[in-house]
Structures are given as C-alpha cells and as structure tokens.
Length: 502
Image (cartoon, rainbow, N blue to C red; front, side, top):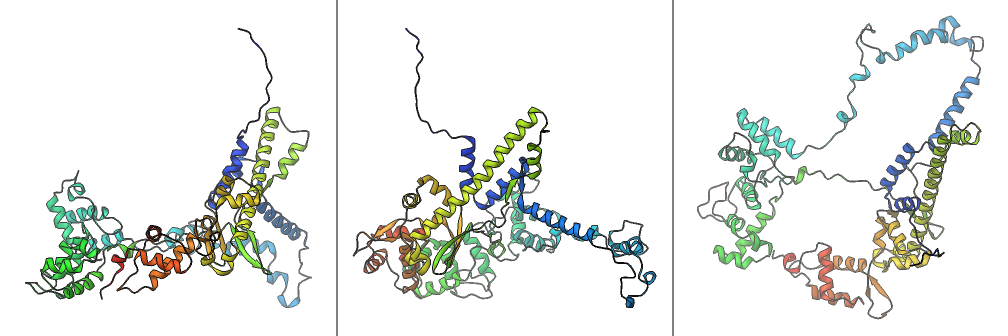
C-alpha cells in the first residue's frame, strides 16, 4: 500500500454562524425581532441605539444653551415686579421655595403638617381595571352564603376546580382526595353552588347544566305530565334534554316526537326553550382580550400606484458606538486580549446592522412582488384575489422559495382591505370554466360559499351538490367533496344541521 498526497478542488455551502444569524433574523416576527435586537444591545457594548443618542444630544444642547444664557439681574427686570428683595433672589427661592414646592417628597418627621408622600400613591397595578373572573364572582357569593366555615373551605376547593365554562369536569372523589372531606360533603356543598349566579354553574355535563337552568324558570312552559312549577318535571323540554340532545343536534324532530309520544309541534316549542338556555354559564366571564398586531409593512396608494412602506416604528435604530470607535482608532487600545475582544464585537455589531438592512430590503422586495401579482385584490377586494405560490414570487425577485417562506412567516401587512398576514396571499387555484388557463383563488371561492350560505333559505338550506352547481354557473369548476372541504374549513355546518323548521 502506497501513501500519496493529492490536491482536490471542491465547492461546499457552509452555514457560517453569521449566515445562520441572518437567516434567523429574517424569519423573526416583529415582537421577536424587538426582543432579539434588545438582547444584542445588551450583550454587545459596541452597539448603540441611535435614537437614544440623538435625544441625549438634543438634551445636552438645550442644557448648554441654558448655561450660556445671561442671568437676569434686578436692574434688568421691569419695575412692576417689585424690588429684588420683595421678589426674592434665586438663592432664597432655592433654599425655601423648592423645598416647599416639592413638599410631597419630604421624609417622615420633616414636615410640620401631614402630606401625601410618593410611597402612599397606589401602584400602577392597583389602578388598572380588570374584569371580574368567574372564580372571583363565585367566591364573593360563597362568602355571603351563610354556610359554615368548613363548608366554605370545601366550596372554595370546588370552585377552584371549575373550568372556564363553569363546569366541574373532574369527579368529586378527586376534589376531596387528600382532605378530610367526604364525597357526601362535597355533593351537599355543590348543590349550594348550583344556586349561585350564573345559573347552571358547577354542572358536570351539558344535560345537568340545562336542567339547572330549567329549574330556575318560573313556570312550566311545555308539557303538564305531573310537572311541578319551576322545575319542568316531566315536561317535553326535560325529556329532550335528558334523552335526545344528540337527536336534537341532528334536527331529528320526528324521531324525538315519536320517542316522547308527543307531536312534532310540541318538540318545536321545546326546542325554542332550549335555544334560549346557556350551554356555557361561564361565557360572560371569559376574558376576551384582543391582542394588538403591529404591521410590518403598509401598502398605500400614492398618485394612482400602490406603494410599500416599511414600518420601523418601535424598532431600535442601531449604530457602532462613537466612543468605542474613538477608543479603537487611538493607539491606546489596551492589551492584545482587549483588542481581540473589541475586534470580535465590532465584527458582530457590523454583521447585525448589515443583517437588519438586508432583512428590510428583502421584505420590501417580497411585498412589492405580492402587490404586483395581487393588484386587483387591492383595488376591488377579496373576490379578485388570484392564486399565488411561493415559486412565482421567488422567480420574480430572483430568490429561493425557502427565503420567501421565511420572509412571509409571522409578518403582517396593513392595506385598505384590512390587516392581513403575508401568508394570506398564497393560495391554491380552481380552474375557470371558460378559460382553462385562468384560475380562481380558493380564498375567493370560500368567500362565495360563505355568501351563498348566508343568503340561503333557512327552511331549505343548500346542499353541497347545489352549492357546487351554483359555483359552476359562476364559471368555477369544483367538485362536491371540495365544497364539503371548504365548508368544513369555514366551520359551516352541513345542510341538515343548518335547517330550520320554524
């Protein structure tokens, strides 16, 4: 065997740490980008926030002007203000006036009369209003219930195990596990909680929740088979709730009427009562907090053309610190270890700034290409949205599809059509009947289905085959199973579930 030394040339794509960082910054959302840039500002001393420096410079200039301004003497003042002794000199005002003006900042014992100190003011958390939660509402009622302390302790334990809808989803045996309470004690306290507001709270299933609400009605609305007022015992409504909720969901009214030995009209009337009940008692206490989305770009029309504007509001504008520039330029740069550290941080800072600039340019290119493909959508609305895939944008701006995917991830655009995610513009297409080369956007087809369902007759809802036939009259070639798929994605019930008999 012979040993040899050969030279070989080859090309490899190596993901350097800097390139990985640039790719990571490209796919970050706006909030994640803010956090990442703040982290870089904290870790790298050579990075500086430009906006903060400008504000400090303006403040310093204002202070310099104030120092250079001449101090007005008594002779320079108008006579109607009185003599300098009457007005008081600046030194006299500093000694007594400022202390009196900021009296609220005095420490204990330094004041001749009581004053509100800064520490006595309520905190920000105490002044922020927040809605009452279901747990707080129930605990307030428990405290006023007049139950013994032991029962209140068990009541707090039960209330703490209720979910957001107001249901007790776990068995009572698990509630009292590890305590000295019995299931009978828990059952007794739970019955007391059932009387709390909102009605139906503490139920263990839907049937019990609806029956608790029926128990609070003042009269027997339907049925009189031995029913006692206020409980609807033996009524048609109770029979439907106890045994036929699944049939009611499927609108099988004749089946329910036959099982309960009543007329279909009585079942209709019972259904009206059930529809007025609340299946989720905790719904009014659910926190429906809206989250604010800050757009990454704005699309506006200027002189008849759509223009893409980058939203850099709130993002730190970074630069290399002038102080460290001066230190590194001077001959007194410190030890070799210090110089090496400064060089490393300088390269990192330059790369971050360059990556942010490249990220902004890439976003503008991608969004401008989207606007070019979807110009009809911006002019006329969602019905003019065209099918679009990542490959078309990638070929238009000369980038890879993976780059387009990273740019459009978790980023939003604000335009006359509203706040839209960039992924919204990429959708599949359906063939046009007259022009096979032309395609309909799946988003616009979903909008057409939603509009048809909204305008249909509730007593004769459109079936999937009928919707597909109507879409064909609008030159959209679509199969029935595709209509069913789009309807399910839009959370539209089937025709049998949408049907109304009254």
